[in-house]
Image 1 (tube, rainbow, N blue to C red):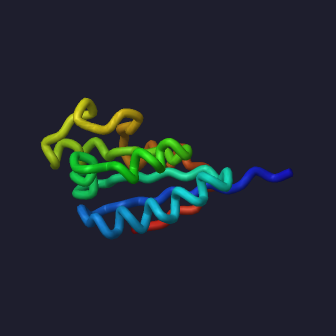
Image 2: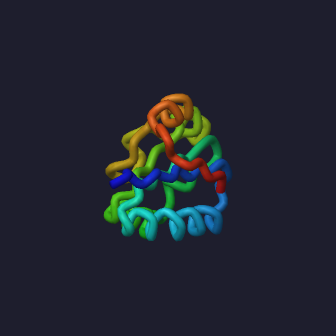
Length: 106
């Protein structure tokens, strides 16, 4: 039996409708057992400081959430300002760890 390829969705803009669309893609994939992760890059990191109700639901389904360290600095945030369970790191580390994942830009 082959392992399902994961999907990494990269959000680059502080755009709530795009975040919603990304979540609506990642959540059913995770529910079907496909590894799913969201990477908040640059301006998109600011979305993590607001109401993240649907994000919490996604994480409960197993969607991994990562925040770009340079985006945190740009937004004036630190790791302790993020919702519980959000990892921090850079795009190089994320891409190096994603293996055979599909990459989707949102």
